[in-house]
Length: 464
Ligand code: UDX
Ligand code: ADP
Image (cartoon, rainbow, N blue to C red):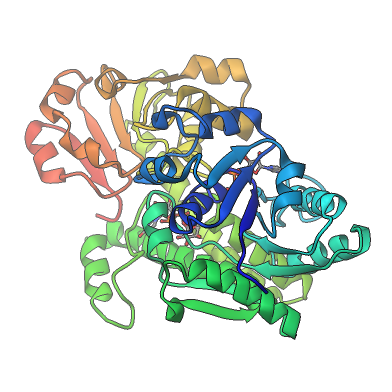
């Protein structure tokens, strides 16, 4: 197969946007068109002012500025872009199902299916279709079946190319990934398609970092990687509770075990709980798949990672209530951070949402400040959760653009995201403007507790 000249990506979200921008920047000879049904989102990607890009990622603005209009295009003309492309990435969202069979566990593939049907209907020439969304194992088979049975007789090759980028470091991860994984058919046509995608990545990634496997291994590797990472967080979080009871310090334990080269230092930061669009969804998927094969012990084993994570979030909230003399009713609790981690404006499955929910059940008033999350997103998250109606959320929760206003007159501050700027605030000024005793609950282990205690704060951190 000759070199790919034209790529289309369906879905201009956290995965499709940054991934395609980097491909375009690194492969100036390939025309990359990202399409999305969401008109506002595409308009934001095309905004002259790079601060208005819909996805916040350090370094992304520069990459977009370099390639946009040259060989990178954002458009709502889905069919035209599909028709013109030799290679189509499917990068649409696959949320956990909220209805029917597999509710709360299985991935909802309706957007993927729609894409496959659209590709089948529009394509007039052979295409390579690449699944880029996080998908349950054997999705490629479903895509293949739709393409082969509803298409216009053109040939499709299906590849699995899972994304391993972490939000907040997406550009770095895309520029210098640990590895790129490409799964495809083992026959000659499959191998040719794999090679076409290898050639795209080889423009900037060393060949020895590009792994090729069969489709199922590739799909399962993605779920497994996230399950292992999440498991480390739940493991250290489980120990954090034991540390609090015994007088051990979870940071010291993490450091001690992380220096064992067999364990390694990463993903051992105990926290209020992991969030993000992948960990929970992927594990739930793994659990669902295991159950569907009757592997109940396997399913239970992985489900425990989620159970521990839910416990950690609930425990953080109930500790705030207990410490504030068993009542937070009518008290102002200030949240520093709402995103699921620093350096992103993504709030999907953020621990902050669940901590807020628990405190709202206790009738607290919550003041939120996050450097990158907008007001409508905070309300959107709480309204989506559905524990109370819009009006109640609007009455009990206020979102601030200024951290000092957010914490003013509060009884307690909860640090929910590890944004660097929180450490550099004028904490004396914050203390002076709070109710006394002034509490800080550090859910991310970023604050200098000794310094805060010197000022007069009552300070608590997870695992100490
Ligand atoms: C993850 C995977 O890392 C990435 O490879 C995959 O493709 C998508 O899912 P992401 O969800 O963006 O990426 O963020 P990640 O850095 O993995 O963090 C996930 C959650 O775990 C965050 O809420 C983070 O705060 C939390 N976490 C991470 C901890 O609580 N402690 C840690 O030590 C590490
Ligand atoms: P992810 O983190 O997986 O990138 P996002 O929700 O950020 O998820 O992005 C997925 C994008 O896919 C959304 O912007 C959504 O509008 C888009 N999308 C979903 N289905 C289709 C479709 N059939 N055609 C075009 N875009 C779609």
